Image 1 (cartoon, rainbow, N blue to C red):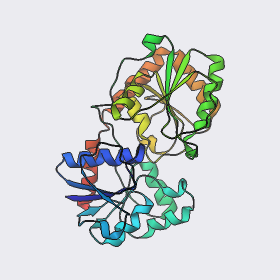
Image 2: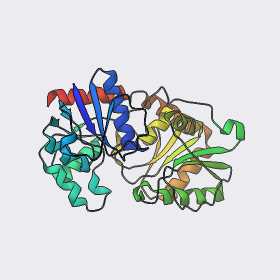
Image 3: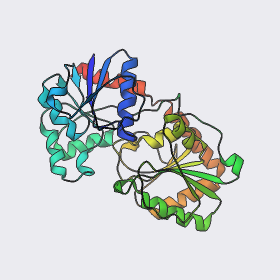
Length: 327
């Protein structure tokens, strides 16, 4: 099956990771996959599919295909007007929730093409907002990279929290909530260090021990997850939310906000702790509880590891092909 995926970029981030991992899994299944990416778009992932660089995403740049999978509102209309293959929208995010001029992106949901979403929560959001039903595929984890490593705290004697700090424009990521929770936690339990990946430059105030690190590959990211005692995720809404699942696959206990898409795999008190978005008091208490209760933390980590084993990119690709075959 020939599948064309237009993308503005394949930069570091959850949406691009979803595309590249799904694309690689489709290639491994024997499908002919081609990414169409503007020349100015970043290319950060080791994609095994064909990459075609174009000056701009226009209808004329699309090759003939069985299916074209636009995945962001700016890629929808060029794909639709190309008339080069069956267009199926892969909605990695419901854009009106997180971009300016939401009506512009919302209008692209009314062109009458099938929609695929990436969680049951996102399916309900799209259905309630634009009246369009969708099929659901799930995200995954690559166990070749995301698996347990020895904990850093076994060497330092200090607990280790890992957090992904996005730039100031990502207001829905809850960065300030995390900073405030850590500030409060430090007053109660100072024996912890925070390791932060910060993909975008930002001006943040820290009042607790921290180290800003880089992660330029899946292997580096996996080691940061795995060597932590606790991974914290504070988003207000996510279509799926890959990082908590990746942390689970690395054998690390997870505290996550109830951000919607993660409900498909995150079960409070069973494989993680789930707190409401922006509830800084409960977030602080939960962090304190898990850092000071080794037994509970390990039980959650073990359960999360078992959960993550079922969530593979091979399953994602198989779900996608099953849906496309039935359209």
